[in-house]
Length: 386
Image (cartoon, rainbow, N blue to C red; front, side, top):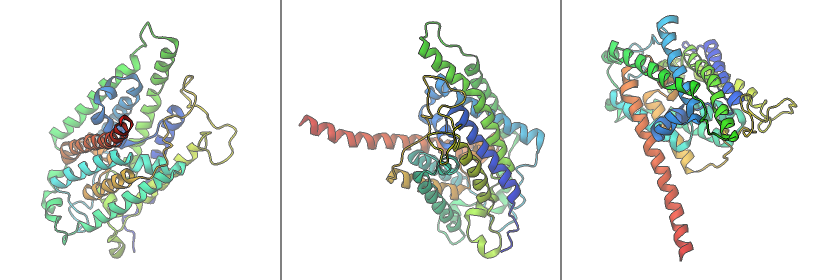
């Protein structure tokens, strides 16, 4: 095995930046870095996400991510997303428009049903030794590999999910899609600005004033976190499809094209994220007298890390959801973080096919979860009446 495409140093550096992004949100804001959860909130609860002060850090995060991406691909490295293997390597698939649509839907549906993706479960959940997240990662890694490896020329779905090599040009950004990406970044920045300037109502109680100030203090750390996240993704090359398929397609183990860079990215992110959890009193595995009981930017009535998940349940929703996410990941080669970057950079299939399908999938998964809960509660209410 030659590992000709293995790039461990950029992988470790980029992964560490992603871990730093997660650590910034955790230690300063008490929040978890979850790209799928953040983005699906715009589909599941758009009004709340766009207007409530408690959600303004999400807008700031998205805006900063978009702006960092635009600056990087236009001013720092215009060839950052160039994939030397795209269209030349027989082992690297060219995803069809339908593949992007189905892949985006599966990722949106699966991550909403299973409550997490490679960042939420992978970088953050495993860093705090969550058994639930470890199971989730095993599920989506397994189905991601099955999906990416199995969708070969002998697969009956291959003609529908894969495109011909002469279609590569249609996958690259155009002037129109680059403009759309720039407009999205500008609109996001404009939408996030009021959160920084908004004041609490004059008739607000002391508690309401303190809650407003706490929410406002989350915005600046979210901006830094988003910039670290964007830089980590592009430096690690997780925004290049051949790096994802190079890992997920295990057939590469036989012909020397397997690329374990993704493992370095996950490893680098996990180490930094794990260290950050050792500074949180309720999650530290080692004795640390200086560990935090409250996030650095937060003051009473916030007195603990109440936004960090503590759910230990391993149920069908988790397993099925993460398995579906993995299928979509292997199908289109995208999870939410890199998809955010490529959309801002103007990649048409990601911008116009993958993301709309992701939002539809997230919305339907949330409706399904609500329906299941309602069906469970309804018989209990009926039995009490009887």
